[in-house]
Length: 131
Image (cartoon, rainbow, N blue to C red):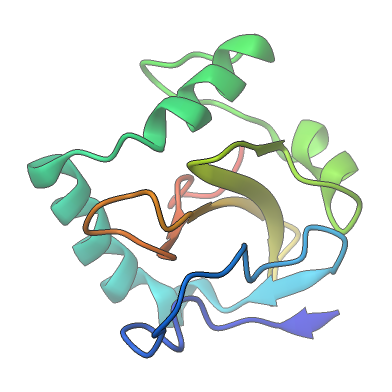
């Protein structure tokens, strides 16, 4: 397992590239260390909008989860942990990461360079964890 700090190189990217996160790696995160930054990112997304969120919403709908009150489960997403992405599009990819000191999983959406204002941003779309 590899410890991950989301957006650690934020603002330092100077050229276009592909996704940084490797869905086949088993990442662990300390959710307490991420909460303040992620809350700020989500506030910005609510204010400015983010086209890549449609990818997450499509994934939820395609997998019979509630788009209005997202409810993906640990049992469902754990099958993807360190195996493959939940989705990959030109706007984003979704990967599963695990909480450092818990048996909880989180879905991280990594934005591509096509997202105005959120290029390469890594966003926890399940801030409360999966159910």
